[in-house]
Amino acid sequence: MPKRYWYVILTYIIMQLSVFVFVPIIYALTPLGLIDANIYWSIFSFIAALFVVSWIMRPDMNTPQHRNATPAGQTILWAAAGLFMAYAANYIASSIETFVLGISPGSENTQMIMDLTRSVPLFMVITAIIAPILEEIIFRKIIFGELYKRMNFFLAALLSALAFGLIHMEPEHILVYASMGFVFAFLYVKTKRIIVPIIAHMVMNSVSVIVQLSLDPEDLENMMKQLEEMQMIIIGG
Image 1 (cartoon, rainbow, N blue to C red):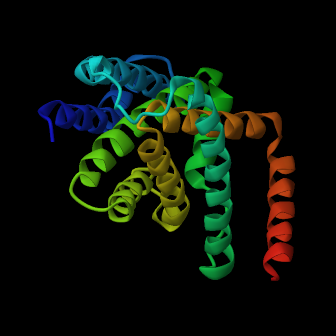
Image 2 (image 1 turned 180 degrees about the vertical axis):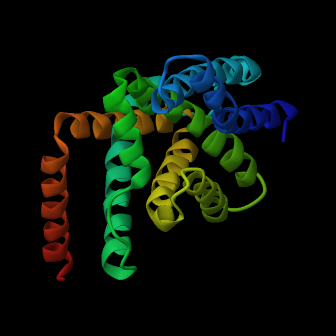
């Protein structure tokens, strides 16, 4: 693996861990509360990481597209198709978790992100734009891409998808995160363009944030219950 890829991964790890160092400092030296300190540092660190990763990845950006890459005009079409595929995979994985494995639906990680976004709406930029870019570069282009050179698609996609799921720190929902990871890996292989899974990931996150922000917690809870009932009817529960 090229040395610059290790630098990208290291940048991502430092960004994730930096919250434990700088948030207490900001909290101690400013009038910000602990939650606000966390939010503003997260915004800064994600943006900084994106700039650093973009600088490190300059050689890849300047490399000509793969000769079998999907034409640029079809990028949006594949991203749209990938979006529906990701939603389908998410639905199937959620149903298996709920009705086969007995795992309660809902994500604490998602709820935390929504709470932060409601507190500081600017945080939506991280969830909807910056995080998907960084995650697709690291988990699809670098981790999956390097594994795919050494093994078949299924095993490479599985390992990179598991890493993608574990980084979200919700091992109980690893199936949901892994299912989306498989879809994004497929899009990357099929189109030979990392921008395709990036767009699909960005739109999926954006829709999720917008829908949840437009509903109050009670309406959202009722909607989740209705979806669960629909799943039971469809599956035959």
